[in-house]
Length: 250
Image (tube, rainbow, N blue to C red; front, side):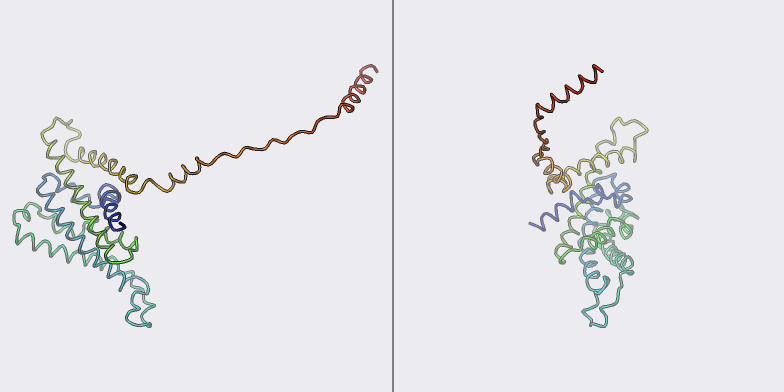
């Protein structure tokens, strides 16, 4: 159940496009046709599902402070976290090169349609962002990292597939000239991002702050106790009246 929740959360709630707006360059450039969007989306899924677990192993056994303790106690003090970006990018670039060779070999038409954007996956911030978010979340095992990598890749794939399908539909629509092209694409992306925000309440039941506010409002209000005044002695009242009468006569 935990892995399923992590998988759905990485697709819908923490979507790379609609939640963090990572990988927008390829998302905008290759989303003119559904066919090219599907090809690039599958490539991103493949790269994510390989690079995120590999970078998890690098982080666990090489980069984080004390990660080299498996070599011996004398290496436990070493901290190689400053190499995080270099090694993560190197891993991503290696996988992208592998994907590029496979696509060029078995799908030359797709390779030609993707053009320069296929090798640019190596510097796609969504790919690097998946590994960095994985490091930030501190997953307990490589299985969780793999599920997160698969979910983040599928989320990016669904985003570019949706916008590509919409752009093909509205290509011949009567759109005001000022909104044609990237203008309408940005508007549609914003609207879909708002729509994806609704999944946060469906999968998590709402934010903790909202839940706390509801609980606080449901608590019964405590009534303030009004101090009861002691009854005034009638003799004292008569004495005050006599005094005031004498003062008035004088």
